[in-house]
Length: 226
Image (cartoon, one colour):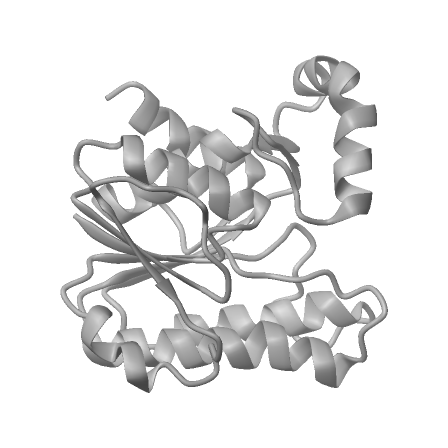
């Protein structure tokens, strides 16, 4: 299986990249981003591309792919709806429409978030924009498309968020993660499980198009047991 990964330098993307490189069924991993990942691996083909709104120059490297794991995202804090729409919806759709044209048999997995508003009419701005993005992706002619809506994500294996406030939160919350897992098993996942679940969806499909945290964890277990 050959995969492309957007957002490989973020916390979720780092976890997904790790699982892809470890998986024996994955033969080629193409990462696309504005900054290098800092990793080297025989499977890894890294594309540093400054303008993600125009992928025409790298289309030749985006063919022959079986799956896309789209982990690119930003916080909506301090952003207007127009600004957040541009970097969340518009940027995602540029990548997705390009990949759907080049690889119509591809499985596309988009990292959304718990609370996403599929109606696109709710009061919360980020949830409306995420819902609009999900709906647009599900209309594209991919073989399969899945929207992942994780809640609390625990970084594993030394992975750290690029956002300072998130890094502080994870340091402070680390001692209570085991308690949270026991009390709220369906509300929390890890970067490892997210990566495993995405691979499972790409290899074997998933029971539904939109997956919340509990479903993500169940799906990851199918890879962990393999």
